[in-house]
Image 1 (cartoon, protein in one colour):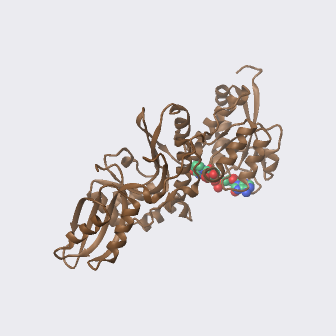
Image 2 (cartoon, protein in one colour):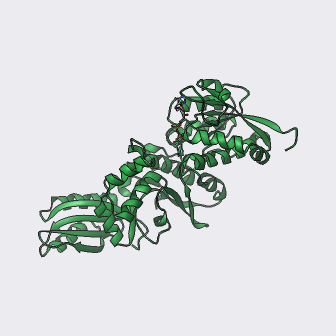
Image 3 (cartoon, rainbow, N blue to C red):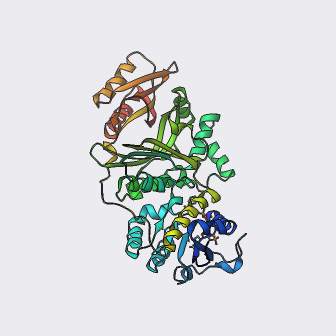
Length: 431
Ligand SMILES: NC(=O)c1ccc[n+]([C@@H]2O[C@H](COP(=O)([O-])OP(=O)(O)OC[C@H]3O[C@@H](n4cnc5c(N)ncnc54)[C@H](OP(=O)(O)O)[C@@H]3O)[C@@H](O)[C@H]2O)c1
């Protein structure tokens, strides 16, 4: 590093699971990070809610006055790792207004107010980077935005929530029930005390919105993402999927429809064991991208945790610092395509329908007729159990959600159907 290298000061908002690792790595790797970015990087202030020392952080840097960080003229780059919508949003806007580039891991904020924040960064000619907001250490944002910038992405499917993938893996491999595995995940720290955001798919939906926006150059917000979680997935569903040589995964899916609309959704999916995403186990994440010229790509790694997430933040920091050192900025958000969101009812999938029916002659024909009456054609039917009650597992060919919903409503009214146990979408099977 030459002696005249620019000095860049960093302010950090938050010092919890992620922030403490960012502070540690900034300190441990200061020399390398400075060499790589072409500027001397120095952590100047760290904002927290509760005053007091933080392990590995110089106590003199800690402040509870976060406003003083975003308004400090000597700070060039702000790292936001506090989470939540407010005050994070106001603090980021203030930092941008004051000419600071911002790096954030805050998917909830970007999936709700990203448009406003990116416009503000654009207007102020500063960077707003967010690699850590989707799938932790996996470099998916930069890959989609830069490496695939010349291609047409047609579909993105991701396992982007480690908690739900851990639960589904244990249910599949150990035959255990959802509630039992959730309790274990909480005890091991893989699931929050309030696991709603993870198990109901909200965390994955925020990431789906960010991936869809990036893939299709359009603004997609979390409220536009159709979302179903995994809390209704039973051991019987997992066992039925297993008997089809398949697994159940919670996927975030963003794809272009034939009408050039974006279908963006989060829901459990039955995937054949041979699909690349089926082998992603435990708390790992993976994003599978299909692009016109590149074909299929898969990105795999740790989607959460202090150090993996800090790795993504430091990658952004080096990029942003390089720009600041040479008085330039990187890419901004691109939303020129401005595509519409496809209504969920029109989206076509294959479906797995598990139902209990009376075990008597003619039942199969009546069930098949009901599917046919809504133009849902059946690919396979498997029957298990004898006696009063038999279980049928029907897998359909591709049908619209509306057609399938109409079909399920009819099935539920049939005397011979005692219960429709579950309806799960099927991906990647031969249709
Ligand atoms: N944890 C992960 O694996 C992970 C992975 C990817 C992305 N992220 C994202 O990274 C961000 C941070 O997550 P985290 O797990 O590090 O959170 P965390 O452990 O709860 O830490 C949050 C930090 O922000 C501070 N803070 C929160 N609200 C504040 C407020 N109103 N005023 C001042 N300080 C405030 C807290 O202060 P105190 O220390 O005083 O409580 C704490 O230091 C979130 O946006 C999250 O979605 C996390």
